[in-house]
Length: 534
Ligand SMILES: *[C@@H]1O[C@H](CO)[C@@H](O)[C@H](O)[C@H]1NC(C)=O
Image (cartoon, rainbow, N blue to C red; front, side, top):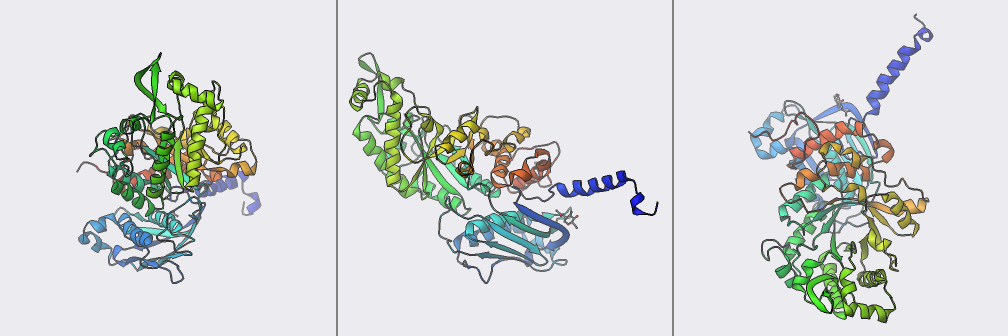
């Protein structure tokens, strides 16, 4: 039995299985999973007193870089929360540790810039004895790397901090990784929005789609048209977003590498607009007389286009992002059909009885305005699905349940960029433990050419506001949105198995809790740092 060849093959298979199963499971605590990560059992202890962030000598960004200076401060408190709560807590680490320096190098400065669709978010992170070296092309890449770094640090049962030798090469799979909040159906206080942006950064989501107005209320306080919120908000002082509120959101997001894409949805979903802007909405008729109710925006009068042009001009100056969402969904024709002026206009334009031509005419007009302002329009898939499709370039957001991959195929076949939201609707209160249904989504699993697949710029989780306000926003978002975040960032080949992902997600949920995000539980048990009522 001494000869290796005589060992039972079963034993070898068993040994092999042990080795494979131990290495196949990604045990690292980074969520979303980096493209490449190698960790080793070499472990270093950290002490808050001997820990520092610094700019690499060859870095284009140096002290004074607003985005990174602020990130160093933020991540220090995230990594060492009990230390920052009081100095006496930190002293016990003094004796065992050696200095540890995180050196951050950026190729291009751009500290005052604004993240965009072409921003390079890639980074390399190398952790070894006494130092971590983080390299990236842009500051946005550094932010992603700092986030991963912060997730590598862990505490033992005595509260000492450790991290292991690690190599990470990372970049996002999709450039657009969005989260939609609806502030029309329920007003969300500023702190709830800022907190959501924090948690987005933890999950490496990078676009805040602000569905800021809709039928129920118009909380955006416009400079040009103050009556829109004066009359259309739930309350003209308490339930609005002032210009300074909006600037705060944009800056808070920018500091975390998050874009803010506002949505001004029209011609439908505009009931609240009508309160502060008379003559904007179509008067509906009963027989020969106005019924007193109003339908979608009136696309037949010049005043509508003058109004939209001024509003969009303001939007251009207030929101620096190159994208603006123009909505275009769920337009009901009943009111247009009832209105004699609309019918006359239809005749004059040669639209016959086809109201899809009218809605298309309207969307095309405002998309042209947006293009003239150098902005890219996003619209809901309805616009692409209109029987008469507008002749403009726009990005389509796919939201309808059913065969969303069929729609992805059609849109990309037409040469348009597309964002997938349909399988990522989180507002419905399905149980948290069914997070895997968002995880196993495969956005590119449709028949199409490589060129078509490249037109899929990303996806988005949507938190509609019918039954969501500040009381339940966080638990309904997190940790389920994390499942989508990993789908949109990580390599699909390495992350399709929800069972393998589960321990990492559990760990990440606990980390969210530790950082003050009220993320729902995924399991029976407890987190080390959870709030236990004491
Ligand atoms: C980190 O190092 C410790 C101590 O060697 C080891 O037990 C643990 O498995 C390592 N973790 C990872 C993710 O490699």
